[in-house]
Length: 130
Length: 130
DNA sequence: CAAATATGTGACTATTAGGTCACATATGAA
DNA sequence: TTCATATGTGACCTAATAGTCACATATTTG
Image (tube, rainbow over all chains, first blue to last red; front, side, top):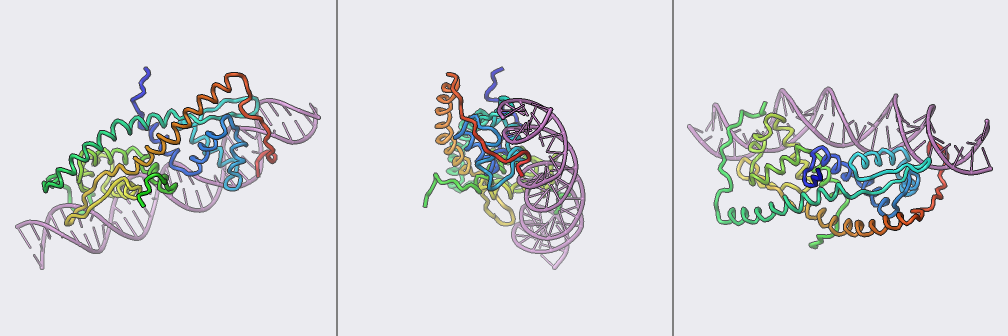
């Protein structure tokens, strides 16, 4: 396999969703600064804002996104930040999107020369689109 | 100002949230392939899956994230994909996270040599954390 | 003007996320 | 065994999202 370029859309959803939360990004920052931290150690940083249960839910979300890996050690759970999913996205952006940026310049130049960007010929149903 | 490095956390939330949806990413793809498209033209690509109103809500979400810019032309609204917010994130990842990747290798090497990764000395309240 | 087109708004429902809590399990230590 | 620690589970409530629809506005065209 080793298919590093194929990106599952559902996995993308999970990663973006996990990152779309300031508390969860904070948790990743904590795990970056304090690798192998357990649940309570992470909670210690967020005591003022959240209970242990909320933190556990966030950790679960991050785990489902593949951004946090865990290892059970005795009665505690050690956790690490895993940047692999971020590398996927990074790759997608540096390929697909950088190609777009170049093409975009071309189109803007084209539009600046006074041409119609796209002909308007939509044949939609009446108002309401029902 | 021209402060390209400062990233507002709320704006980050908006961008990640907007990208955490397969339909919204599809809309961005459509806008990349069809710049200056109006609402109905975008709807034409999603007719089977969504009504016009749902598409408008997604466009609104993308607009709040700064991923789509609009221009009113007569009675229609032309739209473009704006990759600027993605460039912010891209920058953050290529600086902050690449620094972490290097540090992580160091830590894994350290851990592999048999050392305790972190001393356990949490002094939390009893079970339930109430 | 009247009719068709392009878009916008507010209300509504169903689903889901965020957060808290009571309670349960698992492990280590005295 | 007894107790404290570390984590897990399910229920619960509130708020926010996704999607649909009836209706309204603005603009072009005949």
